[in-house]
Length: 207
Image (cartoon, rainbow, N blue to C red; front, side):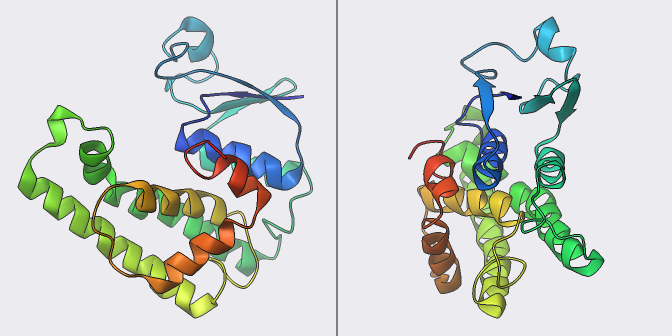
C-alpha cells in the first residue's frame, strides 16, 4: 500500500491525497511536519534530504516534491484521463501545474504569512498591501484562463493541473482579505466543490 508522509493540513500533502482520491489509490498516511514528528529526524532525512513534506513510498520506491509525486501517481495508476499522453495536451496540463508552483504560489507568500500565519516577520503594512495586490493580479490571470475554457484550468475536462490550482483557489478564498470579483474563479471553485476528492481534501484538509 502507498505510504504518504506528511500532515493532512499541508497544501502540498493535500495535492497527493486528492490525487489518490481521484485515482482510487489506497494509502496509509503518517503525520510528519510542524506540530507532529519532525522532518529533521534522521529517519525522514534519509527519505528526503530537503526535510519537506510530502514524501511517498510506493513499495521500495521513494519520491518527494509534490508536483512530481502527483505526476508519478497519474502515470503509475491509470490516470491518463487526468494526465494525457498526447504531447500538446500534456504540455498544457504541465504548464498550469508549473505556473501554480512558480507564479501563483510565490504571489501569495507575504499575504498568507501575514494574514493567516500571523507571523511577526510579515507585518509591514506597505509590504502587505503590495503582497495582496500581487496575489490579486495573479488571480486575475487565472480568472481570464477560466473564462476562456469555461470549465477547468487546461480545458473542458478536469485534469491533474486542477489539483494544485484548485487548492490555491481554496487558499485565496480562505485568506481574510478583500477579494476582487472574479466570476470565473468563483464558478470554478463551485465546480470543484462537486468532486468527492475536493470535498475530502480540498478545504484545508477538512470535509
